[in-house]
Image (tube, rainbow, N blue to C red):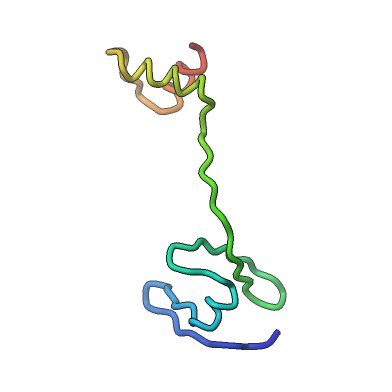
Length: 87
């Protein structure tokens, strides 16, 4: 592995990725990066984060109906989810 640049870590665990490295990776402000660890060291890769819903459209419809109506207050999220599944 060839060392191209170095950076110092702040007390909050943050580093600035040197401009030369950002240009090599084609990353700009707001880009997402993935970190990995290998025997050679840390691997830094640009990546795309895709937001995925936890619920299917039909499940969201049930949740919206429940939210719109007055009903029971559940003691835990687990109990509420069990109720939603039963609908």
